[in-house]
Image 1 (cartoon, rainbow, N blue to C red):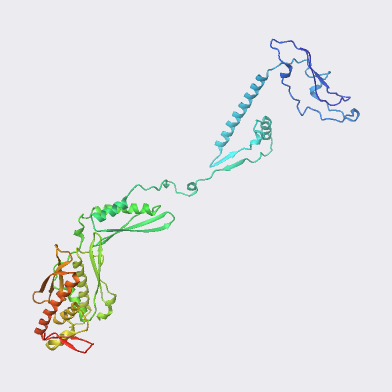
Image 2: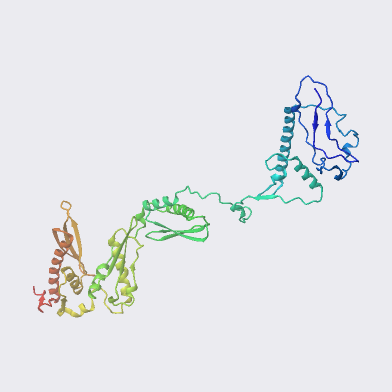
Length: 482
């Protein structure tokens, strides 16, 4: 293989030291594996050793400083006595790839150790330009520059830090040992079970009252409303939602309800046999004052019946218009018992408010003052049933009680009779029955006519006259002589 001359750019010669203008490759022996000279990798010149270009005029160029690399070589060739070793391209690339991979693995281990050394929720990220170039390749000179900076007193540049988003739960100040809420799911059905239990076994109605002090902090009070009493259950603790609080209260309510008797009827009030007709006495007093008591009936599904009575100011007792007799939360088995209980409460209150010596047994002072020679006036156009209600108190009787019996074989047909009682007197008088009357209204009118006929006879016995006034012709009809 012949010698090859490689020409390179070099500065102009100077009197003291002149760099070589060309490099001569010494001759070398042939090897068994011939290699083309074009495949030999050429090492580039170090930029620090390369002299700056000068002007083409040799006389105007300043002398170059002495270079220690060329002091021992008189001929200007540093490789004059050094044999050239040829290396294949594949081996050169393989050695360089191994060095690159090894450097990257060392850098990854060093980066992971620095990350583990940090505290809290912060991560340090170094500038990639310090280790790699703009294209992502490895830069060994950058690593050397970092080592030189660490050896000097120069302050390293600040690292780029990236903060993680802290969890909202970790930012809150909590006492040591305080449990943290992880889930708000509800898997119980205590509220539904409590409603079903109250409707099927006992006559109670659950009512929940919530109170919110802070966001997601609720308290609850459970009330079990029933005929005899109202049970209030206060639940201790704070709950994150109303539904959680309701389930906790319902669980306590179920324990209370299960201890009660299963038969709800045992919790209802019962009316014993009364010696006085409280409903009739109240009706007589209201008829004498020409007012009507206001009855309000209540029915709770599965909890019985209740009744309240109100009287207007025309009744004559101070403050009676503000009173409510009876209790809608006090339930009875049927409407009749509830009505009797409310009327009894009203009559007892009226007797307490009446002045001493005032009769409050159903007969008004006007009727008592009439005596045997008294007259009972009936306004014009008064229905027969109302005439009966006006005459009964005058004669000392209670208002009649109408009893209807439906015909099972003919829908709409009724048998009706009436019962009239005298307070603390003889046994009640029964009038009727009238059979097979179509409709309750028609049956009431017909039985009221029979009762009026019976009352006229009783008025004659007591010496009273029943007179109906007619404004059209000024005539008067005397029922006492008929």
